[in-house]
Length: 370
Ligand SMILES: *Cc1c(COP(=O)(O)O)cnc(C)c1O
Picture 1 (cartoon, helix red, strand yellow):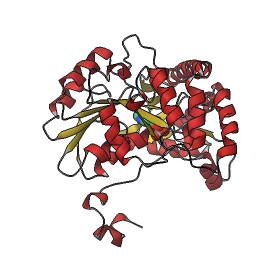
Picture 2 (cartoon, helix red, strand yellow):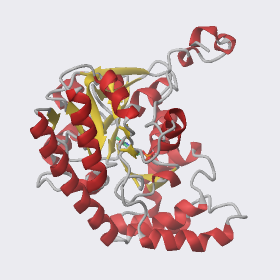
Picture 3 (cartoon, protein in one colour):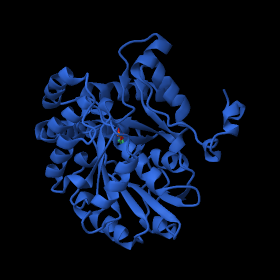
Picture 4 (cartoon, helix red, strand yellow):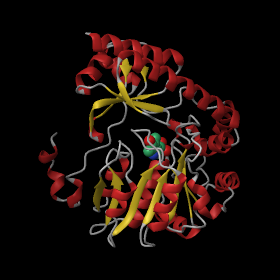
């Protein structure tokens, strides 16, 4: 049904008509069903090719026995474990059904019709959706070299701005901001404006001046930092993430949070995953080798790319990505078109295993030569 044909729009909140749903990476099962193929490779959703670590798996097995009961709605053990890990108080933690959930809580608490949020061109697609879903207005700053231009963003902040969204590093560009630049930006914001620093990929980054913004929450009460177990911890299907902020900010988020938003398997797995440094180390190492492998392939094929510090890299095909993507799908390789991010000639490739990366490069070479 086309949007215009939907009679419920007449009674929906007016801003709902302009919303388009988030488009996730195509599931392997869907592609294989559609094309009648097998053995396809999905490098479309920045998932960890190693999946969960052994400690998380064991914790989930134990938690199975209690699935007849509701989870701990307050996430007592999980928040204590996270608080200890970050050296903050448990009252600073807001748990979410994925970190997307926490982004949505921020929007529900601080955004409404008549106020504004600010983010960058090519920024994570959830920021415009969260903004528009509550009827607030998005102000989009021009990017600089595909990354966030903090001066351009600061220029859009007014007394109507309630939320600024920054992913560091950003998805889908893999660009990042230095500690110096980001800290001076947060210090320049008025106290009436919340800054969300989305650190979904932080574990992958080893640049010397890359910030850990969780260290700044005592200095900046209007700062919230979000983290996730979906990427380096390999728990994407469980849906678990969290925010770290001043306890007074967390208090408001917890007022609108669904009571049982994080399920019991996720809580158990996350507690075990936090201390599994070996799994994160192995995941980061595999990622580093994989990025090298892909970039080497792009160089061979004469393709440009946006330098990335995440677990993905966005390649410039120098021509519209749609037909290339369709041809790759027929070869069982699922990548992510990023036209909706203002990058119509690019495809985002999540870093996979050595074998998956090789299959992706071979398919890309064949499709581009055809
Ligand atoms: C993947 C991603 C997230 C994580 O989402 P979850 O809901 O925690 O799975 C958050 N922010 C960005 C920028 C991402 O790319």
